[in-house]
Length: 237
Image 1 (cartoon, rainbow, N blue to C red):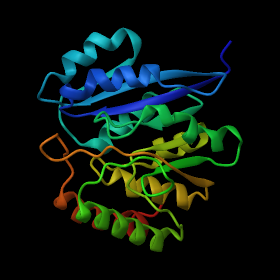
Image 2: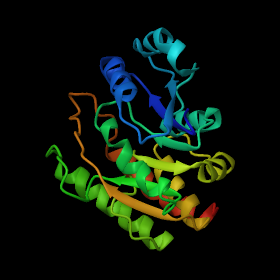
Image 3: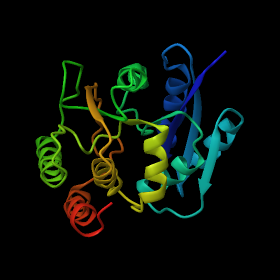
């Protein structure tokens, strides 16, 4: 008999090419003994065939289909509101992050060492696809600025892989407001402001090129600078 549940939130926007593959990988991903999965797929107003694919999988997941595109943050917030698990993992649908590493993310939580775990693309010796220098530099700059405001020493604030317990989930549901990519610095500002125990673990990373479908660009990086300032200095949690 299962004792605890892990809610896996998958925000989706125009990911028809990878959606069935990530679904299968999440379904087959290992979990520590005593845990079961609750998969929540949130379509953020996709214009491709993502909604139809999600509908075909709806018998085995919680499917949320938003009519209007609002952004990743809005999709994550909708998934959090629907989640009922003891633990939550945020999983992008683009195959850049490996669901086989869920046990790494969950271990500090199950040992009651952490309230939230960040999967860092810049720690450890796991495989990484070599791509764009300026993405790497931009991530480091955003993480540094976030750390200055929060007094943390994170290596990868912008990572998709964030895994947390129910107490953190409840606080995030009450406090998050970002609709777009500002969701990452806002989550960090909230958990730092509430003094939650934060861990990092090294993960692998198979980043995409723009030809392969990567969406985030330099404008999102500039917006993130504002969001770091806004959520830490103006709208403090």
